[in-house]
Length: 125
Picture 1 (cartoon, rainbow, N blue to C red):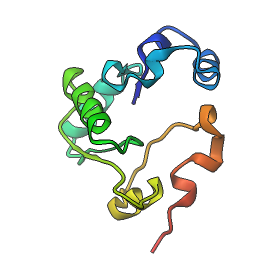
Picture 2: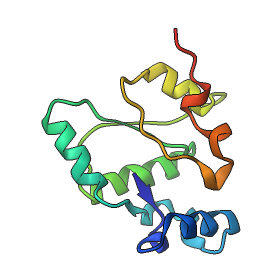
Picture 3: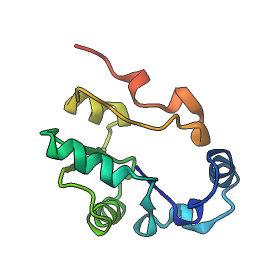
């Protein structure tokens, strides 16, 4: 739902190249991230229709998690709990605990594709 600011205006393919090549330091400046497309409006609409919004971040350090939370607030994302990994947890562990009805994530192409996606590792109980 968010991306590094220098990705704005670029094609998906170019953004993947930016991340893979690590050509821009803003990739690691979480506090400067911006919404992708109309993601804020989509989530606001879902929230107004009664959806409970949960956000899931790959960030684990307290400062980075706070940076992501700040981005959500700054850009008007609807209120929702920000979930993140605790010590010893994998990304899928957080998603399994939440077990949402709908999980929206990117294709993780820039970090390894389907192997890195959360949903491919969630155990259904």
